[in-house]
Image 1 (cartoon, one colour):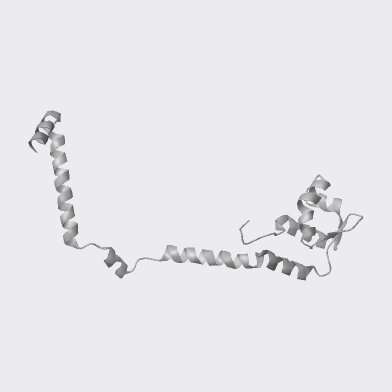
Image 2 (spheres, rainbow, N blue to C red; image 1 turned 45 degrees about the horizontal axis):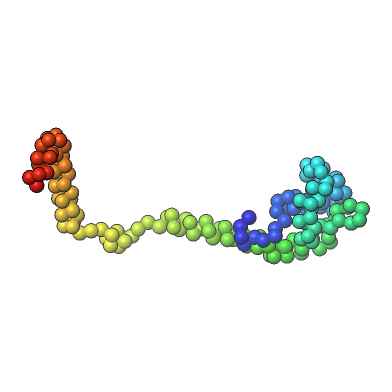
Length: 154
């Protein structure tokens, strides 16, 4: 989870809210656990249902009936603002745009001219490099004994 999103109820929490609303706003804890495929009700309460209850988006009464509050829409909106989820999509789109700008930026002619070395400097560098390569090619042709002789004379 990104650092700017704190305390979100997550996908499972959203699924629990959806299941409660689809069932008419009230459902038994055991039935809710069965609908989402959880075999152990105690673990389901501890792992998943507690996050949504702590966020104030669902409630459980003494008989184990899960219900949605009447002002769920306002609570969900406030939860999105509090956790930063409402701005997550905007941040993601801005990051994607910034990456595209960086990737698509081609150098201008002025940039290329600044980086280009004058022809004379390149030509001189090429002559020195070719002379060094020619010297090593000659040493390779003559063999080890002659190479020692040529080095001694140099």
